[in-house]
Image (cartoon, rainbow, N blue to C red; front, side):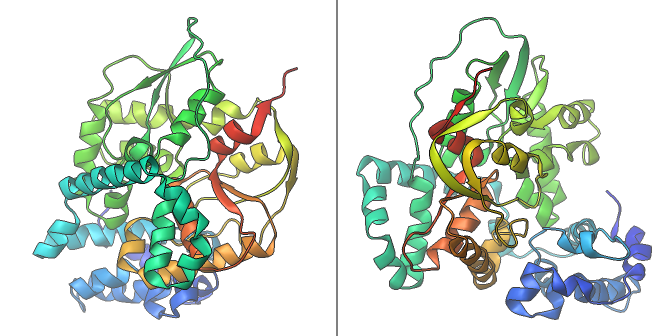
Length: 405
């Protein structure tokens, strides 16, 4: 990865036109000039010239970004702001003394411990049917304020839309796919993985599960490349069998795995990146039909292509509703939602209101973090007949059946 100094020309190319304001979700929610690329480039220009120094406050301004990269798509100079901000944050970690609090927040051990605690808590919720109780009283909890809304959001992680009922085809498979299940499937709720296995039970692909660590998306976005490359090395060590694909059901995991080759010199990282595909690639040639007529909208994750939307549109029995700003950031973006809760909630709320206004039954997406963002927004609004946010593969497994030729 290039150093910040090597981006001097790109930073200088920014004309300070302010067009990024019109597409930046953080700016729209906060009206903070430091949230947009123009404001950050003013700061970085000073650092590159030696007029400013990296400080914790500078890092805070750089963190005012969801990483959606909408500014790049709208920028007349086509500047990749996200890449530059990552390089700047990486430099911060290299030259600045990190506080004890920051070290704790960046602890991967603590991250895994929190995931384990969440898994235990969610399993207890399901065991004692608390998820159903919270769902029943959801509209009342939302009216109680912040705590009630957080309970509703946490409960969205516990809810399982379906139970797998597939019979595995034990015949010989033509291809082998290593399943990168991701943290969400591994620790929080495995229903997406279960749905994928059910949908592709009769395919010619043998799924192999390895003990992967987190893909490292939060460390990459935060510029903590030391932690990120450590996770790359751990995951590469799991590639000790022949395989045709690395498959994932998460748009963010797919995006990050394809970048492994850019941050590691290990030859296996290039193979991993080259063979990484989304489950949607395996479903493009399969036709599905809903069990009953349904109205659906989609949310396009920032890291996903438009391919999965075509799969949704081609499902027989649905009425597809294209909601306003369906392809704009949900506002969650992992660590961003923890560091900037009010802004994150406001972005999510605006998104959710658009879907409520469209009177859709389901909001379909392909990223677990986006599901959290959508549910965070829905939890901010008290009204009847709210849509359900659901993963594409869970939707297909529960509400659809393949159309046989």
